[in-house]
Amino acid sequence: LLFAGPLLQLGLDLQSGDKPNWRDRQERWILLRNVLLAPLSEEFVFRSCTLLVLVKGGFSPVAALLLSPLLFALAHVHHFYLDLSKRGMAALPAVFFTISYTSVFGAYAGGLLIRTGSFYSALVAHSFCNFMGFPDVGVFFNKYHFHRHRVHWIGAMYIIGV
Image (cartoon, rainbow, N blue to C red; front, top):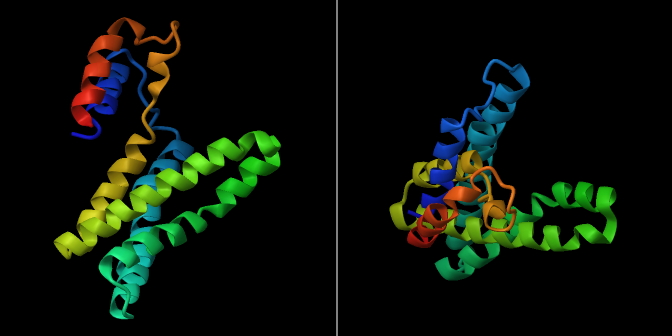
């Protein structure tokens, strides 16, 4: 249910003709990287290896769930560096936000692995989150957004999703 709002927005985008161009080779490679390769490698390294090694090494599951996401966020530091080099100090709020939500997602994916005992549950969640991207909340703030006339329905779905 968490993605109820974004899924409605995706459906509206597709209905309005805003569809990805799957014939473009670059878009296909980006999709493959974001939905399969990155989740597969990151879930293997950060959940199957790092998290489980921390637990087997004596950390409590809760401590491992708090530490492992920080390592996951640190692995994305190259994104932060690029953003800071392009935008300077103005990028700091976005960098902090990105570190925050990658850490929260890392804890969520780790919790899935520990609770289900399955690598695949974390992999599917990671792939889905990468496919959906971070929710586009611009519809609530931009009076010219192309779904603005449906803001009440979209807002209701965001609330239901939470």
